[in-house]
Image (cartoon, rainbow, N blue to C red; front, side, top):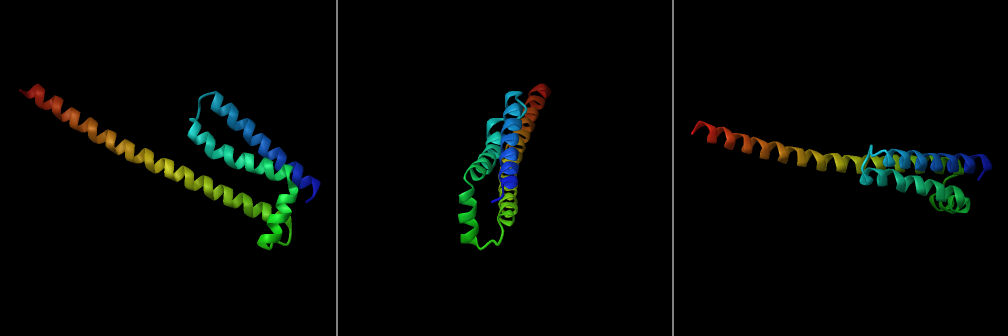
Length: 116
C-alpha cells in the first residue's frame, strides 16, 4: 500500500476521532451516537497502522488495487452508519408517539376533571 494512502487514512481516522471527542465533550451528542462514529474511525486508524491487513483482505476478496478496497470499505462503513442511525431514529419515533399518546390522555383527564 502506498505511503500516501496510509497517511491519508491515518489522518482521516485521527481527525474523525478528535472531532467526535470535541462534539461529545460539548454535550452536543449522546454517547450512543458517538459510538456509531467512533467504531468506524478506530477501524480506519487500525487498518492504516496495519497496512498488511489491507493487502490480506484485498487478496481474499479479489481486489486488484488496495485503493479500490479502501473505497469499498468506506462505502460499507457509511452504509452501516446509516443503518445504525436509522435504527436510532426509529426508536426515537416510537418513543415520541408513545409520549404524545400519554400527554393526550393526561390532557383529556384534566379537561374531564375541570368540567365536573
